[in-house]
Image 1 (cartoon, helix red, strand yellow):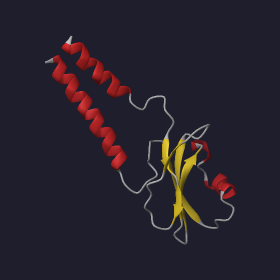
Image 2: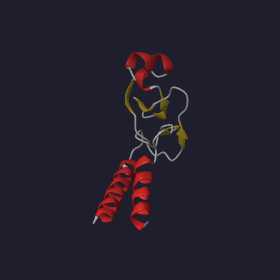
Image 3: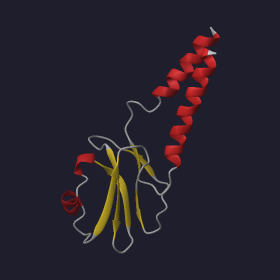
Length: 119
């Protein structure tokens, strides 16, 4: 029974996040710091970080296939010159990599628990 519970916990930890909408930072500012997050809906399957030449930074959800300079120019007609990055992982449009570290730690914990169950 103990092994069944442990294997079940590993399985549940492995499935965390599957089937849920991507989560992105959502803010427009000049600081580069962002704590506002949003669960993207509809066809938005990516996160955007767009940097204006003057330092203004836009973070938001986006349809990943729309992450092209020509399309972004029409989405942001008031922005004359910009650079951009798009990604498709939770909170990947932030300034830090803490979300990626959390995912790696969850995976390592799941793996350790799984091996502990086998032994």
